[in-house]
Image (cartoon, rainbow, N blue to C red; front, side):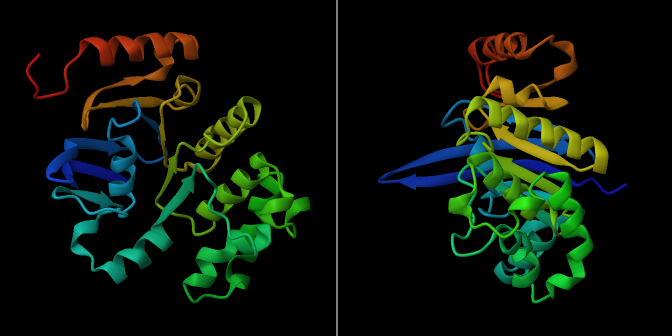
Length: 255
């Protein structure tokens, strides 16, 4: 069975003036088909760099990322762009919608950008619009949509190509708590209904609690992983997370 996503010993360094910062240090992770995984960590922990490596938006200095059997490091920039457009769905905190396009046009943009006719995905588009509750907003531009509606459009855009994995970077960060929880519930339902593989990067326990498993990142390393079913609510999960980051050293780092 081909796994949707595997991260193998990924290290990524960035130059900051005369010094070098190691944003990721040997991070490894496996995501199962149809799994909803949360990658949790504080600001500066390396979690967003990890997501960018998973998406092929940044190339690791060491290690590799494999999506649906394809080693991303083996692809040229052009082939990587094409592969990402077709096989990786991306959802961002800031929505990243094109202001001049309608909701429908934003959703079908990955298909049109791939040189295909949007009629090829017409049935899928109608299903997504209905399922995400935005069918009545299809002809509205982003500035006429609420934050929650814009994020639903972004989710539909990420799903329109039926990707191997959906990667979401702080998807509730620009939303109020009610809209944020609605988006989390929606992602969990999509994961269950469509056997969709979803990875959410977040610093919020209330978001991570919707996932089935949490991977904790600190100082560029994955400290540990745990199942969310063991915790009665987000507060209990948050307490466990704090215990981990406050007491457990990163793997391979001396206490």
